[in-house]
Length: 245
Length: 245
DNA sequence: CTTGACTCTGACCTTACGTCATAGCTTATG
DNA sequence: CATAAGCTATGACGTAAGGTCAGAGTCAAG
Image 1 (cartoon, rainbow over the protein chains, first blue to last red):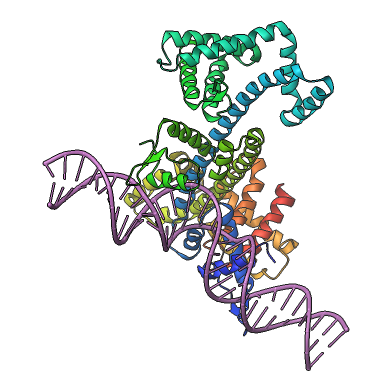
Image 2: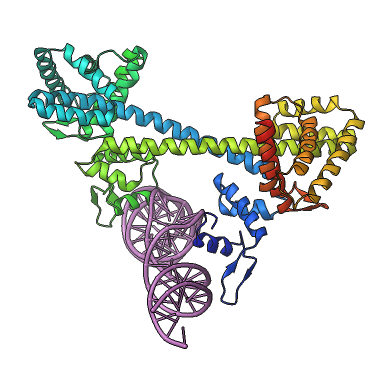
């Protein structure tokens, strides 16, 4: 009738938030105009995410301090909003990093695919991430010729091998950081320097976090290796703070 | 040890999200480094408000589409954030209206209080709503002399009497709207016109909503009257839309 | 050996309902 | 009038992510 389910009315009746005006012989609940008005009030506060118990107090306790309730509720909501904002930033970073890595695999895919399939795949990719991202990336890739790419891939393999052999070292040690510097330059060749340069540090550290949160990327001998991921992320974080910050 | 409770570890073990590396004879759970790393991943996604079940999939299902998960999660978070923003606006409006009404009662209080008590009350009020609000309001009130205030109060009583006698009428009828216009002017004398003028309409309609959501304000013969509140809010809404919008 | 601090399992509690089962009521139709 | 469709009532269980409690076992220190 008014956008609330029967079950909801049962519940409100049960907790004394909204009692029916009367019952029929058969026990059916009957609500009058007064109850509809009260329901409006209940829904108003429910829209503000007040718990039902507190709505009870607001409506029934004459000494209830509505001000303080609103103010503290406002503070709580602000905190929630801030937390969501933080989460959105983190998600965006994660997606950006994921895109960065996927670009690498793209290049591998494009290389070995017949043109038709590559075209179909491209369409799908555009649907997923939007045209802009894809086109940007392709433009970047076009500037690299096949020899460049092959070389970068070989370099990356070597860097990974070196780093996986240094896993027992301190991630901040010069030996490790030297390889990390190579790693960074290699990654940057794919990413280009299109991002705002002062954000590159964060992006690189974020990529390290990605390695930890998604085990598909940090591999040793072809197998995902969580310890290697953590090692890399520490080393990359240190690098970004000391050399890119 | 790592910011998670024992109960949490029990739960994660139970749902297969994080199983201990082994158990002692006595059944104690033992976690190795690998498990700590996995815990980091779990916490990462939990911070993003992913449900535990989905974290299971992210970490264990190799065919899981992390992109789509992140994108749709992002959409959901955006919706949540927007909803919270709306709630904050509504709360602010409600508080502002409440303040507006409280200012009226303030003036009554200040009038009859000895200076010391008034001063103490003022301090408390400043703590609650911030100095700016209070000072603004006091400046406004100072411009009105006692005769003005007395007259406004008498007018308001008359307006309320007239309106309560019109409760059976259509809230949009000219007779009602004529009294509502008086009501608006009277209120405005207290509020001043300090708000952005294009927001006055919304503020007035919002005051009407307040009457519905808080039964302390709309009274007939000194008694709260929910029907009168609804009648007033409808009439005020119509007024703000036709005359202030 | 005892004590205190820890762990184990199992169970119940929280929010605001949705869903289901069983039973009774109401109403339209044959 | 009988019956079936569609409503309602009550009671119960399930949800997410643990918190809290109870009773029992375990560990290290004094």
